[in-house]
Length: 379
Ligand SMILES: Cc1ncc(COP(=O)(O)O)c(C=O)c1O
Figure 1 (cartoon, rainbow, N blue to C red):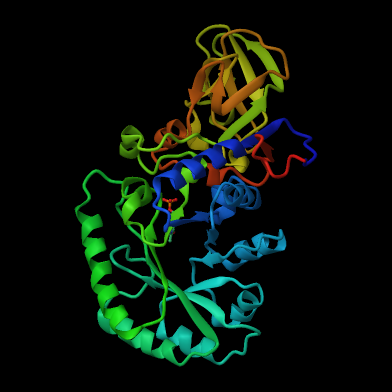
Figure 2 (figure 1 turned 90 degrees about the vertical axis):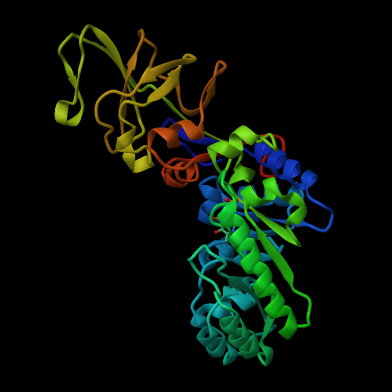
């Protein structure tokens, strides 16, 4: 375990990750396998640890956003297929081939340039289809024809899959989702008239997989729900799969003092006490991803909610306590304490954002401690 000299840490419960993966796999037909999405350092949970746990729990492959993330997994000794979602420069394709990584493409020029390289084995590639996300991917049938034809004589590449990404699969109104599905069908029709070798097909993120597990073709791409977070509030209410949140964030009181009425706290003196008050200081701040906008939000001490008072500093945050507590008392910023809970969704709601953003934002300065008996690193 990493040496900690400061009492602020995130706990990642790998049993929860394993539980969420198994819950999802149970819903899928036999033919549909799972790609565990561990981009952005496993949504801030730790890519290698999450990947190992997901694989041990039944995931067949992994996906990341950038080449560096894929290399980190290979360097950790992970051998399952790894798909890179993002654009990788043609000049960097030899390193991908060398590490048996699968790259995403969606441009004719990209194929043309990559054709000129010699790889020790064919580079695995997958074609992204933009059916309405508007981010990357082939949009029209004529573009699809051009790309597919360009790929046909590329002996140094092997097309292993085609995929699309939904923009609204987590919403109540699924009209746009069905429009994307129908665009995908049209593209698939055009593609299958040209291409007669088998390819894997995958369309579903967590939301689509949880809602339509029987329609997910060869793979699902399971991201946010693997971490125990629902893709949206409406899906949390639907609760088709019972997820367990894996991530919690903790600190300890490093200073406790009583202040008089009329005394102020932190930069800009935005908080002034109305009576005598106990104030605690915790060693976490916006440099840890505990953002300044969280002023006024709450934390848990002794199983009770205590407000954050004054501006959050770069490295420290002040809270109002209901009584004196000893230095060293645990403060939970995200997670459970004595039956009370501050969920990832509570933090996201306060910040007017989505739960995805919260663990991604907790910076590298906060060590991740892995717990749970599913933990492949516990021995
Ligand atoms: C292409 C692609 N597939 C799958 C996912 C996983 O989505 P989710 O985390 O909603 O399951 C993402 C994440 O944004 C993605 O970009």
